[in-house]
Length: 240
Length: 123
Image (cartoon, rainbow over all chains, first blue to last red; front, side, top):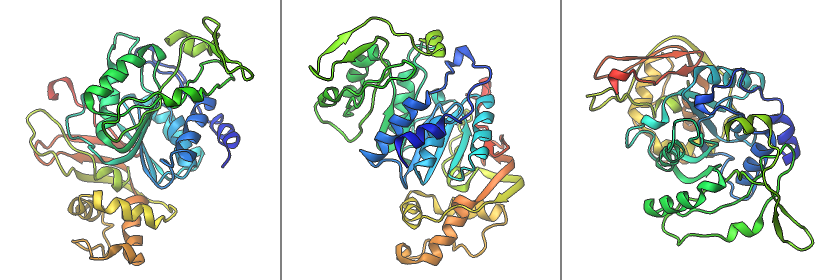
């Protein structure tokens, strides 16, 4: 399946009808979801035939995408039954047989729950902007417990240093694979960012991020310039 | 809920030491056709709690002739892998509940989705 096809399919995925602010519910845009999944699949081969977990799956954009890329099974985890109902409907409409859904609270996971049961974890976790500070790190911790090969996650650029430090403390290797912008239609991949490594300590890699300022790379000069705040999609504007 | 997922689920009600495996009380079960991927099944087998899987299949009346113990050299045994595939991926619990073997607490399954959320006093 090609990237454009994947994105086109994901545009058909139904999203939240009444997003709950306190849970930071917003849909991962089909474009970002497609790019993220496509990279994980074609560059890292971490989807096809693998057991994948989607933490904070919401309406299932990432999971359905993973299923379309022939994940062995993708299990979505979320706390909200309304979101899971929409995901379930989506799975039915897309006739996806390789997804499963579990309702649970990922912040309350006991030590060894689901430990090392998944090959790959993918997620677009809550950022911790709504009286839930630190939730992104709890999700990361859960993800790192559950995955044997890799965790792919989206985070705000402003939290990057903090995450790097935590990754270090946990003995985890982190790579920033792509700098993504939250504008409506543009995706810029900053290949230079990929060379940002921590000292190699253990086996996990992560993709970060969702920057909150608009930067643009001039293709001729390869220079990056900041333009200040972007006009993100409406939902992003409310939550970030 | 597929049995591959069920194989991972545990009860963490306060005070419970071993909330695994969860007993399945199903009121509605469905069998779907899912594409058979022998490599995937092969890779999943070592990660499974085999007895829990057999017990779950039994509880659903879908065990058929799944052996109580893993057969040696299963990697090349396509017949065996197909049986495992059926039980792991094709049998689905749509309605019912999962019961903690220690506390008896029931976790409902509705429209195929198990609800593992605990109440405040159970955490």
